Image (tube, one colour):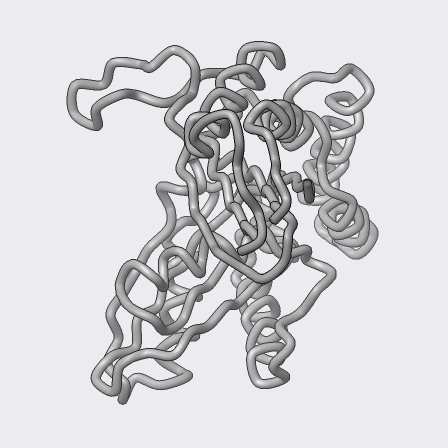
Length: 280
């Protein structure tokens, strides 16, 4: 049994909140540069150049790349041989979010109640997703989620007879309806299968996968590639001003499901697609 202190967890989450908001991931950098080099539409090319420059300034000046520093989504993989010492894991994560958003001068965007709308003042509570795995390690992924893109996400309970084409049509229509609102170019997370709630979880978790990595199943790898082509053919373009670059990637995750169901969720991220991780 390996012990991990809540103090170490808090310190790790604090740093991840700041890093995810200050520094764009290397895979996203590459996607943006490639898109800039291959974009024929002058306005689209100009916007992509400004996005790349914005990310460079944020990293150089140690400041958020966007004013919406998101709601803290925290994915935790905890090994079965790990014992947390010094308090509750959930409390340690929320303390890390509180410190990260305060010390990093990140906007606090969480309200305590969805209808009475009183800000909690420290961006807590985080949305925490747990997964128990083998081993004696603790993996933490912090993915700040802005709601310009979150609000454009959708879920649908398709019929099994809708099949592959039904899934593709739903994904394309969701992106089409979103238009410029999620700050394209976007990354599209798709969850297929499971249940109503699990498909939404899959779609969000898909956004933490590097855009350099395709689905390990060749069937879904090909679907990712096809959907990306079809989405970019919509012509929405960077910031919605037209162009070839509407999306940087499509990431699909799947789970087994019931014989009577075909749940599909689409979770959209803006071009920043912020996430940072550490293994303790």
